[in-house]
Image (cartoon, rainbow, N blue to C red):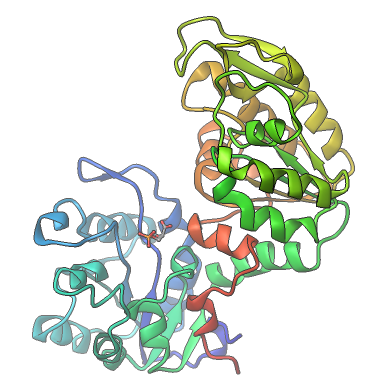
Length: 394
Ligand code: 3PG
């Protein structure tokens, strides 16, 4: 793939698709990681005297009322602070005002235009990759840099559409994500251990299937563990169960040939709350009327042991209901155990586990924390990402 350093950008209008789909509350950005991670590409383009035109989607937009709170203006403001340099904001996604602002850019200037999904109000033009829209946006620049890894699993006008009309390259963030996630899965230094959590087996089937042939061990926690217990004929009380996935879980366990490791104990309660009778029990001793809400303390030790000597570790999905303090210990324990591995390449595959590691203050101890949620999952499933596939191959 071409990367941004392969392009001659000086004096050129460079369109940059970033993923600035950041969490917002009351008009404030609550986690700016995706903006911070986009800085290397933007700084490079400024230093190389490009005219930088940034854009992204933010949230999902179907009708006019959905625009409320989804302007990219706060992102332009935050980026101005992070760069120490003015990022001018144009509250349009097309038209003369935007075109004039782009024409007025000097070398090294940075402009951001409005949420690309505001084009979805009238017929989902952005999200359905309307060919005219991709062509129009491409006409605004000379070159295209796609740094939006988090959006790479979408085939939209602002990534795939533009790339089909303009010479394009991957940005540094896209390159970094591919290097860490792609290389770890395709060519890992062994032993390679994957730790998978999250509520549902159905969300992770593709990842488990793909990693079965690649990882040396797959440690399973989170709500999906109970469907696997059921597949082994164990009693799970009132724990979360995907009854229609029991046969599949059984099949995966058989094919895994011992590679899949299930928690030896679990923290249970009488209901989905912190009130009640919280206690740790062995996996085969979940009492009637109790539900498992986290892996137990013995499992944290078990997983720690399984991780010893690992050279590549990928973690995706919390080990329990970590939003509630009583059921956060498993996720905290696993996060610490991975963070403490000195000689392994350690990767968090985005989403909830990335948020947990940042909140716990362990972000710096990982080799890489993916900015992708859905994109990382699909990458781990071994699927081709359209946003990535559309980037020029020379
Ligand atoms: C994400 O946060 O996963 C990406 O920005 C994609 O957003 P989407 O699921 O709304 O397409």
